[in-house]
Image 1 (cartoon, rainbow, N blue to C red):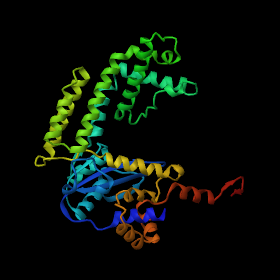
Image 2: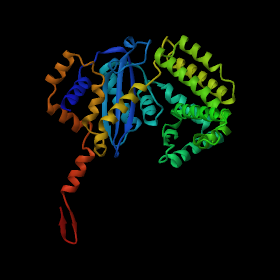
Image 3: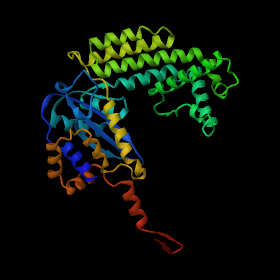
Image 4: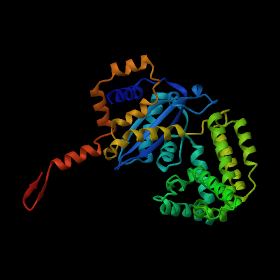
Length: 365
């Protein structure tokens, strides 16, 4: 673990080149307790390979800071300090969280809305109040409860995360499509007495809706792949519009209209750019990897293990590892932790319980 800390510390604190073409990707993540960790990655425009999605070793770790609360002013101060160190930040990519949006606005940095979150917001507006969508998802939840501990448990729908339900309609669409195929096959073979058919037959009432949702999901997946591999450019926009042209229903037409507006508005923000990075998925992936690391001790909250997020960006070649391990001391890690993380929940808990509690004049240790 000390090696992970050292590599992360080294990547975070090594000198960055001063240039006029920096692009930053930023987000904040919540864990147990009050603390939120703000992570900022950077990449120079000249270093982006628009023939594939971003990879961790493409990025430079710029800031990892945990605080009980964040607001636009605090984020603005960090961004101003960061731009003073780096040179010019052309634009930032991230979601539309209020603190990040305000911080970028106060710092005068162009904010590109991450396409994954933009599509999720569009999908939410389309389906949040749609009666049939709500009915289908409710029936899926009911089915999980009913069959979770039965011999048909292998059929139950995936768990729906409320926070990212509209960001992951693929999960819902895929299950509904496959489950509907089972029912239709059983029906064609006159197997209506089959247990699988009995559990899934409710899907037949929603056949039209499921097919429409599947078409929309397929188009969204293709659009995200095009944009995330090629950036937003003339080619990717043209191919996306061809995909959107296949959607004929009311929801499909609305999706097409809103995504066209997103393309136009984004290009206006950086009018001279031929290709624009519009995805912050890489930072979501970093948070996911970090959370996997802390699952063994979820009660610890945010600790200096967040340095692993910076370590992900290391190319892990012999020379870099040698520098990281030789130049970074345990005292460096401790000092960084006090400054940018503070006391962990475990430390606070230990201090609180060590003091003992007085009850009726007696001290309980």
